[in-house]
Image 1: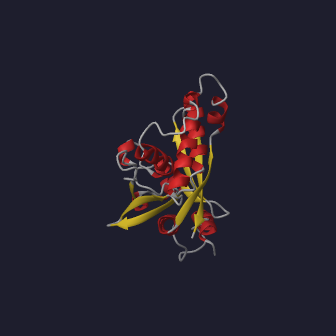
Image 2: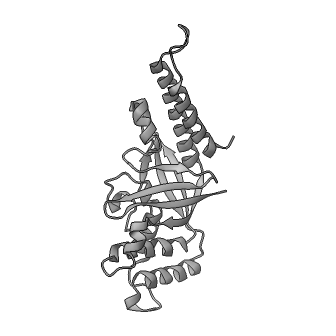
Length: 238
């Protein structure tokens, strides 16, 4: 069975177990015991999902802004929304590949760039023009390559970061390389009721949902206080 279906099926099974009556006979499990069985199944499925995510490589496929963000981007006061959407679309042109390396139960993010030096320069010029159109197509980069790469790599892994992460927690502006390290959320501490609401909070300190869709895509939600929930969607690559 595909894992991205398994999590949903196990959650449904857990809900079914939790609603079974415990009054049929003396041998029937108590509701508390049924809840605990269901709780452990949800935790197991979440752990398997986290393992699959951190063991695989992922290519950013698209950024889905929330309806509020998309609407705001069309207004005079929606500069932040417009910038967020513009940057996401520009970053997708780099064909980056995201992966994680385990180090003592922590997972360090990596963002590979398959472009040649010449291709990268052309893409960076296009990115610069997309983000700063008022400067026109200058034909040269205004800032160091490392600064651009830190911003671009940060954009594709920012959604995995803990909620109060700063830019330096995600990438290094001097090297352009990722600094982000994530840790699996300890769902064992949650009650059955808490798990039903929060079982997709897979990364410690990140209150957004991270999950696999029915078609095997990795979905990482990003909640903004102003614009609500947007989504980064990634495709598994070999």
